[in-house]
Length: 118
Image (cartoon, rainbow, N blue to C red; front, side, top):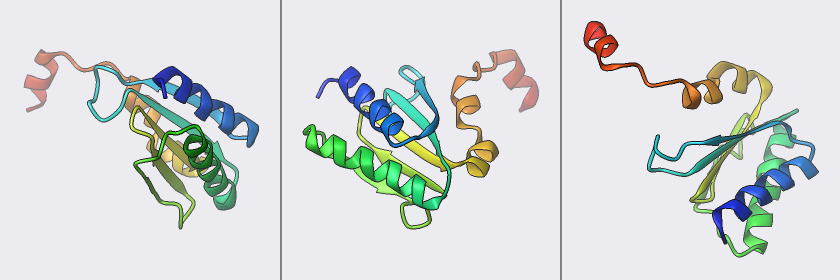
């Protein structure tokens, strides 16, 4: 499956399942782990699990077998690895605490700043 089609499938499935504040972050050039991170919020542990499971099932049906899923038992933060797309589904309090969007979109500090901090 093409990367853009996979990204669209994930976002579409999250939207259908009433995922909240769906954010796509392009991390190409920032990490070798994946090309896109998608972050979404669920309203409860059950909703978080359901969102991640729905994306997993949709990906499998489209021929893209997930590489792994973590956190589904607790339902506070579920990570689904689809190779080119990594999905993070979180409850609002967890998303507010970790602020993944901020982490992956903040500019890299310049070399002088790093040297002063060392």
